[in-house]
Image (cartoon, rainbow, N blue to C red; front, side, top):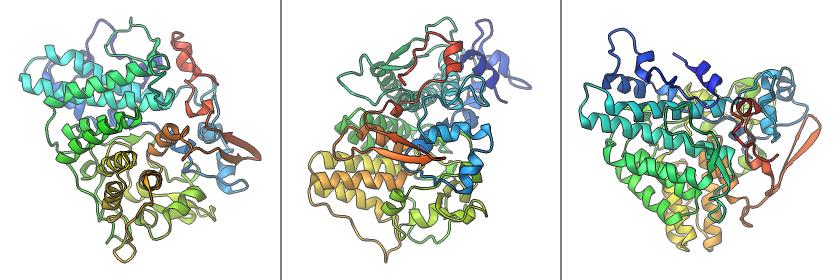
Length: 468
């Protein structure tokens, strides 16, 4: 059952009415209102917990469209696709009031997760029928989901973390209770990261070491989320330490070296994928359907090369997308597996966080050891060659390039573009042409931060807009 009408009415998905608690309005059949078991069912309803942003991949340098092609014509054929090409061209207003889409579904999806998490955290302690240990585990899972949602939100609608300004830079409305009376003014970026870290550290003792499916949080999930957060904060030693902790519990890499074509018969689906530490998806479903398919940039394709299994297995020619799309290479992994792509933390991400830590610690040798630990599983044996680095700068560049190869079209490239845009080793101005107009994304551009939809602000005037 969907509850989007509640999200739209309240803008950031506060699900409490003040007179009925969560289970009173959502249980039916044999379930008894107020029982702990209800919250287990809620947390198992993964469709309401997994959703993350979609437009960040479109805005990233993973994607490159070409004027005069059928895909451009298709995108311009209907206002239905306006959000897509406005994201691609880094427009300040992606969801105009009165437009086909006026509410921001990425914003709604992540605050929806937060509201469900708040329901579990607030109501489970007084629920009946469960043991203290069961209740603590349910709350811990909800804390991980809430932390993940805020980490995605802050890296979409707020500036990249800067330790000197994070206390004053605008973050997000920090909603931690089912209470429609709370202020929706934006907390600082520092306050958001502090809450993320608090939620995850509080969750850890009560999380299980394993779960049946990757959609359910474990200790590895929380450690991985902490590693992500500290990497984004530039605290590389802590990021490395938490990556280590995650890998203690789960460290399997999928071996692509012997796979020649991708399907669910020879590659694990998301809920059972041993690489995934917590499954999260780009909301909107499979990407590789005609008009909104992600055509890969020339720079990314050159970086991948044609012998990399991530090229041969996870991408496909234009003919696989649409018979009229005569050229180009597209992201295809999700369509090949018939499921949405994972954007949650993974074993490869932890490995490359460690590699980056060593590169930044001037340990070139160990940086390359960890990069090659991953790369060995990404090439056929006859095509694999270990990477080497001439110095620490070269090692860091190679680590970031490997992140690009591993995580293209999976949100993390946009995060890397944001956090590295002021570093002279990675700084660049990106230019793209769409329908005859040239658009530029400079390192100083405000467009590295998505504006909040005016619809959300109209419903909640306390929310301050990002600069255009």
